Image (cartoon, rainbow, N blue to C red; front, side):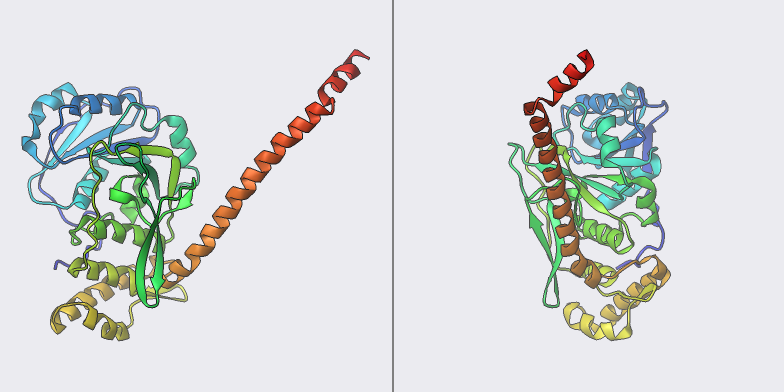
Length: 358
């Protein structure tokens, strides 16, 4: 495996870039949109029109296959849209990393062409609401094509010494979320870059997504889910491949093994004895992977704010706190309505009128 990247976009991907010669019309929010395209769609023109009408600061369309359509022709029709075509085989994370370099805006909404994109998918009012507090990532409430919900709320847990990701369909606005399903989310662009973006050496999309998200939590950032930002798949949703492999080993070494000590993180050499039997590779290969992870953690040791054990233990407490706050807010709303009804029934309003007449 390649060594763990030390900086954002350490891998330089050969690419072709078209368009973007004009500014986007009617900019209404400090946000960009990144559209990841897997195949040609007859509705592509309509999709780009709708995204431009939303008022994004910049629109970037990343094409996996340059044969989807004539990029030069479509870039002339949409001069404010920037089209990026990688000229080599890349991961999903590479596509997003490249686009993050090209967009303008405090936040960037990452979408896939499998999503049913509609007019006003993100409005300026909603954008202001869901970015209060400047979270690193805001996940949408994703649904299936027929509007049916599926698990998009994820939380870290453990079964003894075994790490596990639990999923749920229970939606609460603003709830903490371990990672955005399918990588579809609104990202704070500067925080995305500061976190190093996606690790291109982790090829499977699931582990790559989980790696960045887990790192964000360990480095003190927040990922939340908004029940107001809703989207549906226009076709079958993606299936997450959680198969254990050398790539899950890299996630394990970067995120689960580091221990937070006083003010920094470290990987003790004693952890190698635990990693070796679960690595499914030879001694020297396992040792090389372990050394690389120790180097990476040492380079970033003071960016950690906690370790995986603390994250798992504190997650339940955060959920209970959020649920209590949600219930309290609902009770206050009910009490306010009841108080207004009581004032009205007690003649409070007519009494005020009589007072003025006197």
